[in-house]
Image (cartoon, rainbow, N blue to C red):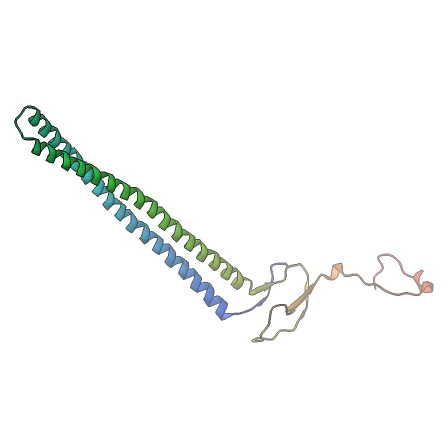
Length: 193
């Protein structure tokens, strides 16, 4: 049968490499999950700073409006109004800066996560390749037929390209015979030898 195992070769280094890449892939996936949580936490911290700065803008805007009304009613000096306006402008600038920092952080978060995903895919591809190489150490017949020859001994070293076994399909074999013309008349199609 085509899937009949003929030989099982061993290469301890190849098997160790496959296991190593499997664990490196799992470690990279765990690092990705950890990085994602840390970056989300940092993003929430920055969002909190934006909300605080937004609250400061509203408070200083109320104070500015109050000071402008008191100045218009000649109850407060111009200095207090100018001070309230300066605090409002400062709060507004701080709010804009915190918003920009949040936008930059969000872009950075995505870039860092994408970089980690690329690393995981690279390790996963290498692991799949190593695993395939280890799986290919099991030599199968490949076709239906009979084993004609196997010259390997247990523990023998082989190199790429060595013939390990021969499987033939005797029902598909064809013989070319040289027969004298005088004897050809005695041969019939389908005749058994």
